Image (cartoon, rainbow, N blue to C red; front, top):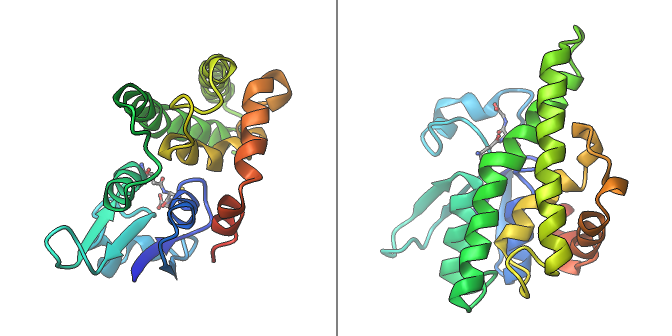
Length: 204
Ligand SMILES: N[C@@H](CCC(=O)N[C@@H](CS)C(=O)NCC(=O)O)C(=O)O
């Protein structure tokens, strides 16, 4: 069974959601971030970057155990191995990859920084302004896409949608008001209404 090294964070929840959507059994290995368990040698042996999520699959590509870190790499590994959560159409596959990497390189880090700056005891206006503005701008990019298509890849729910839901469902944390982005708000509601997503969000 796949072990998911997990904490209930925007990046952490991606993996149980994907596994639930794919119908793949898994076991959660809780990682206590406050106690810095992710910086211990045993964890660093799985992810030298010292962050969750990580998976360990006892049945890797060569039949031997394999670990995978970085949520985008994990999502693509699972989508390939279990042939799901990626469109079959080559054009939509490209769109799924674009928005997957858009989340990993844009939405995730910018929302994270915006939330961090907003919660510092000393107010650093330049940090708050910069990261909130960028988070809102990125949400505007999603809004434009979702006014054209029901899912980020196009017609199919994919890893690109899963990658985003952890942050977009708590957009307020980064100072992003979803009332200003109606297509994004509707899309988040549709994702959260999926039974597999609800099960994944309940992982612990
Ligand atoms: N790019 C990484 C980001 C992972 C990440 O930032 N994980 C956070 C939780 S959401 C974490 O482990 N934080 C603890 C730390 O930085 O020590 C990914 O997508 O997997």
